[in-house]
Each structure stands twice: as structure tokens, then as C-alpha cells.
Length: 168
Image (tube, rainbow, N blue to C red):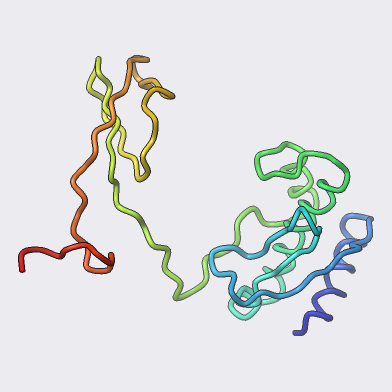
């Protein structure tokens, strides 16, 4: 399928399911791996993963198009267009879009190791974190006590450049 065919498809879905025209550009992006599509707020364009079409077919891609069109139409109407907004969730449910796309076969998400631990000073409850956080911004969820940041020993991983993998 070409970008022109995708453009016509997005325009049809927009008129049929939203009752509004899609007046901007839709195109495929084969580099999208962890997401099915993107909506650009500054240009109002939409990108759709061509890999999703190859892997799951037109039915799934139409749901992704509906998802991106929800962002598009709500943003232009100055309504809540983010994933967490009620307007977005209601419109997505109404038109039958998908909230999350299926992961592509063969594409593995890289998981970071835990590097930090927040420990409650009062009740000693521990919270593992992958990124460094400011403990003064949070309280313990159990007793509302102060938290202290404790760095964990970084595990040696051979796929990390510059890290040793053990004794040499």
C-alpha cells in the first residue's frame, strides 16, 4: 500500500466514523517499532507503522488510524486529546479504536535493570526504581514517612558499552 492509498483510507475513516474531514497528511513510517502510529501536534500529520499492516492486516491498522484520528480531531476542537483525558477515552470507545497496538513479532523491548532503591526511613518499605528520583518529592505509600535514595550495585552486562563483565 502506498502513502496515497493510506491518505485516502484515513480521509474515508475520518468522514465515516467522525463526521469530519481529515485535512492534513497521512503517511507510512517503517521505522515505528514500539508504536502503531503517531499524531504530530505541530503539523497535525499522522504516521502509521507499515510493519503493523504487514504483521496484523488492515483491520488492526484501521483501529490504529481511529486512535490517531481521535488525537487529531480532539486537538483541533481544543478538547482533551491526551491518552489520560476523558474526552479521548470516550471518543475512542465510541468509534472503536484500539488503546494499544499489538507488539510486533520478533521485536523485543529492552528492559533496564533496577539501579536505585527508595527506602522509607520509618517503616523500611523499599521501592525499586530504574531511574534516579528526588526522594524529597515523594512519601512512603504505607506510612507517609520520608524516603531515602540508595543506589544499587549496577549489574555487569556484556551488552553495555564500557561496562566490565567480570574479572579479566
